Amino acid sequence: MSLISIVQFLHSWLRWIFVIVAIVGLVYFLINWLQQKPWVKQGQTMLTIFSSTLGLQWIIGLVLFLAYLSAGSSSRTQVEHLVPQTIALIVAHMHFSWRRREMADATRWRNGFLLMVAVLVIIVIGISVLPSELQWRFYVPG
Image (tube, rainbow, N blue to C red):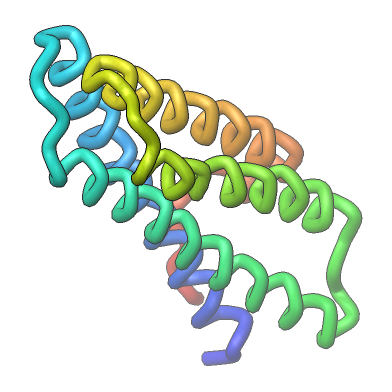
């Protein structure tokens, strides 16, 4: 099994872990926002898990990109995928700047929810540039 196959496998499967984290996070933030719950530390923890999972996915994707580059098989599509995903990673980590700011609890829940939605929109845009056979599939080395 080649390095590219191993990294493709990790990149493919980690995306689904990220999707699960994103869905759980969206539901968690939406419920707490709509029910006007007081802000709890678990909200910040959920945002950290969300951004960290995306960060790990980005690092694995970067390793995959560099592996393709060193093999001489990188493409413009991969660059077009990497750029929006980098922007999504930056946006996903914006929540760290809110930690010590004074904000109403409802604002924290709303901002967390909207941050996740914005990141997911950017990610979908970044995935849409890939060929259809690479979008949203499980990679199994063959």
